[in-house]
Image 1 (tube, rainbow, N blue to C red):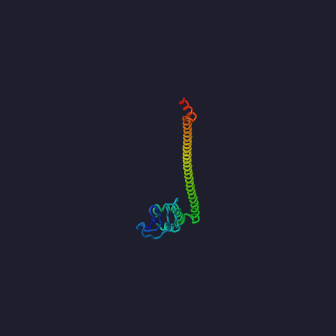
Image 2: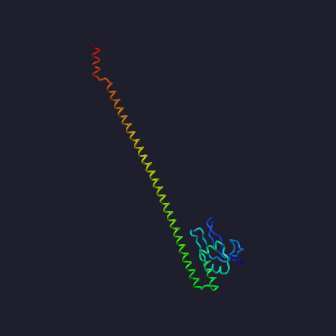
Image 3: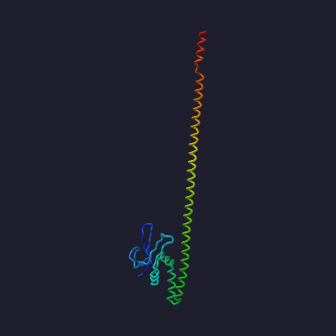
Length: 202
């Protein structure tokens, strides 16, 4: 029986979540499996890989063949390198202590690179968030300036309308005063009427 280490899909549409399983190569993807040894979540950044290293190494040494994706995951976790070292130990090429030291040195370097990548991603996210906030602040400031300009324009128009109304009222008052004066000049006084009567009698 050919044994494979492969992924079994779960999760909802467009949000995949995988189980790392040991299964017969003839079994369907979501069918019966022998053992589950971990999980894989590709939706996070970086992707989350949670695998039982001892079980995975045991199955690799027994001859289980990983798929391409699982092989990349196992390499990322250092299990393919550990398998290589363990085969050397079994053949007597190196001692177990030497193999452990080499693997620890490799893991330390790998953890540093992962930490560096995580820091880079977080710094990039912070920079993007800062740039987004600055852009929003600029838009808010421009909007506030536009609102202030509209308010100033409206106030200027209202002031101009008030001035026009005051000027119109003053002109009306002057016109009414002039018409009153003119009518007063045209109206004859009682004395002038008596003089006219005297002239007629003469």
